[in-house]
Image 1 (spheres, rainbow, N blue to C red):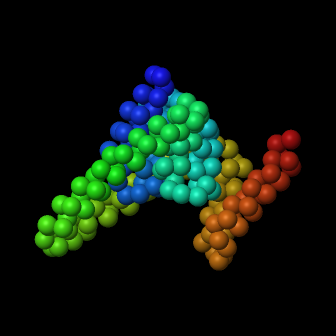
Image 2 (spheres, one colour; image 1 turned 90 degrees about the vertical axis):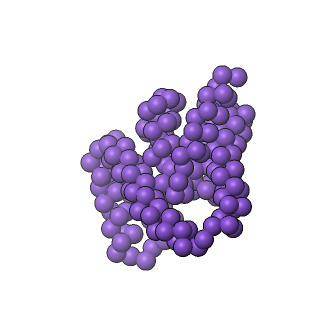
Length: 177
């Protein structure tokens, strides 16, 4: 039961400070799950994040679901998922009623200022994941190749992911085994 309470408190906190969508929240989830609570190691979190990215649905909710499952099974998944969406739901619901009464000028003013904040959160999440992922020269090589493929070609993300996985296995077989 204590695990479920811990999950609820952690993901309510994450939900309260979640601005900018899924990828902007990843750094906060990682901080809470890996550093603050020590529920997962960095490699375990990266595995959860990878699964969350390929699973249909919002990445932040998928991540909460998987972390909840790792910590508390099915009930952990339900509690973590519910807690992660409760506060954002209440905020959006309340904001929808309040914003009907607000002058559009003030809304534009607000949104012009929140965009850089959101961009900063996405960059922070990216840097956090990059630091945790690039643990050896082979990982750096795969990162650079995937980055170049995404910039220089018209391949979609799924194709790059599959190519990276195959190349990663090949590198492992040739250089590590």
